[in-house]
Length: 357
Ligand SMILES: *[C@@H]1O[C@H](CO)[C@@H](O)[C@H](O)[C@H]1NC(C)=O
Image (tube, rainbow, N blue to C red; front, side, top):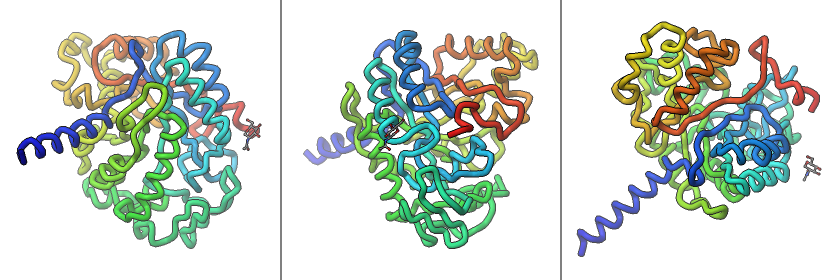
């Protein structure tokens, strides 16, 4: 009897954790498209007119929560949260809800870029008009106060897991997710998005948070409902692990999927002639990749397409870029993701039609 109860408890635990690696794709569909910096109205139309009919499975959207308004409006202001209210240059909450409903109606899931490692490092007003004050660490529209943050130090030693996870990344105030009050606000935000019909989350800067804290947060988020969705949301985490650092992707893949950064770096080299394609005969875990069931595979993303690594292929090198993407989409490994953003000549450049908003 006790053994049966134990077994049931164990299988419930295991299946709920496995849910967090389930991408919740509708039958017969594949691939997430990251529509970086797109407006919610434009994404809704794209789902109906292109992604749905062409068999795509999902869209990763830019962070929907209020962010700091930074001069010249660089794209990265969206990674500086002021509150969890859903008003940004991509649209307000009603436009967001309309997008999620219309995409789900044509079988396309929405995945939110969730930014909760830190808050904004800028004092002033956010996109919904709320204030942030970096001096007093005050974000009244959440609210978060100074005791919700780790004390100030800079992430500068990638051989030290405590430095990576307790210090401030790029000068951004680092939330302490071990506090119940902090966890509660994050879970409320994610639950609100689940209520609006999203299917999962790309967890920004997961490498800079403690696995135990993330595990606790994910397990507190409610199950999906509506549009044929059930179980825990899909969590896929930004853990940049190309080897040689203190934080490993294998610390995160038991309770969620992980963005496999090695995937695009290795394929980028191979399709630029820096490795023989015949070596790809055993492409997968034998190359040091996570198991496909634990991984989101991609060639480039919004960050590394602006980076300086020669391994990373982007739209600026179209022929090998398309070859690498075609190989990825044809190969049976992981959940695949492609990116559709905008052409740029400098790092800070903003998508054109957003500049005026
Ligand atoms: C949301 O934005 C739309 C325009 O996209 C506007 O018509 C509507 O009034 C806004 N809703 C709220 C509640 O602000």
